[in-house]
Length: 621
Image (tube, rainbow, N blue to C red; front, side, top):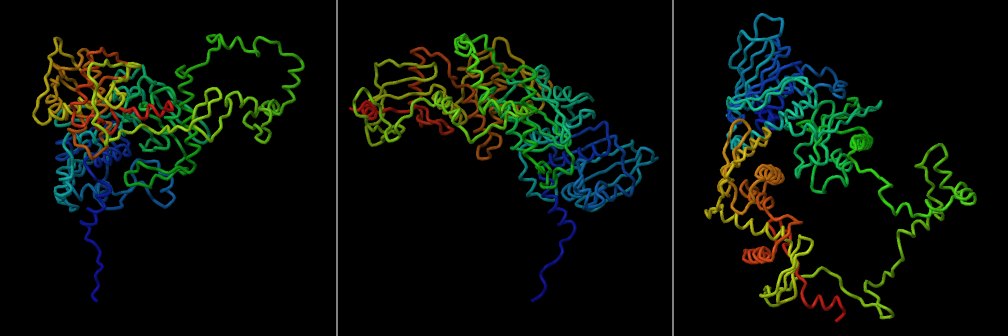
């Protein structure tokens, strides 16, 4: 048999390697920005054309490169940051693999201009499909300018997989923010299609966070600062009122490198326990400084996932630091015994502590454990006799486990089946009984009598189903009425939210909104859907964008579907809203006129049915 294994040509090998490094324009943005930071730049400018598909250019005032280095930078595995194997485990720079420029040059047309600070002339290199087309001296300022043009021009299939310009621009902004937050001492700017969307002056970390996410956060940030011999942590977390319904504004940096870590995120979330709703997410930008030998960053192509040598220590440290910061700024709830008069009635307060009781307490092992070397956590587990009566107070009387029935007097307990009520579709179709009034309980649920018993309706989920089907109909040509505002509202958004809203404007206008651009990152709301209460347009649109982001990672939904689901949730009647008899009647009728009235689009039940047979079984009939 002839030999069939061959070495791949360099250009094909480079394209395969580029598949790991350059997945979309944002990947190139990340690599080029990190190289600029490593070059010691104090000013970095990012220029984008056609959401990065036509142009990604990074200009810096760093140390630049010599003619030989400029040519070598496009070779695979060429780097100035690794000399021996030990260096791989003490990484202190952002980029180090030596594949960034080689990968970019394999799938784009690249132009490089660079000059060292003390050189008279610079170097210009033009590379296309890994082949150097031109190299010549050029007049240039100190630093480096790299322009990546026509991404994936030689791989049309990869280009076809790119998303819309708005979606790709959001990814670019995400990568830019991660680098900009890491280095507040560096000036950054972003220009897209000749319009500047970020202009971040040098400053402190807090100033950079406010520049990126908006002035409204200035009073909602809490400083985190803890130091030990093993590691340091610093940064900011948001106060509970700054929590959002999506986890977008959450950033972890280890040695100034952005990372993703569900493990450390859990440490922060647990610090906020019982301070924010379960479905809300706090804002944070936390920086961990750790000896590079204690972690491995070379475990993922994008370097966003790392491994700690002892992740339990890091988890405990992050949790304690955030908890301490929140407590220090009087955000966590405090106990004030003076406010509870019941405390004053306890025997420990009213009755004297006699010598007999004192000697009894001092002789207990529990007292000795707490006082010995001040080690309160060395509580003995073997002897529980002294604590058993305390336990009884909280456990209450024990019930027999053989029965789940109720005992009344000497009546024998009955075995009742407490399973969740299930609708039997073999019985008569469910119908509301006319002429019988509806009852609202807790301003959240509606009880309605039916021919089979009664149903308990969730007013929010029912309204969500009604709105969802209404918006679906609107997306198929049945327009939703709009009401024009007497005084149009102006909304100022962060750059990333403004980019998202620009992408959604046409769809929102079809669904009853009247929104148009009104300057940089600003929009004018001239009208809203007819059934939406006016006066809270700003918060409504901000919450709508947050809810839309909640669906952004779910690829099974189209953009229109995500928007419709977000609007249905945002505009639905929330728990705690009082409804009149007529409003309850209208909502109930609208629900049962839906094509699928029993569940929301997300699969949650809009009502639970209690049939007559089940009710009689409960009472032993």
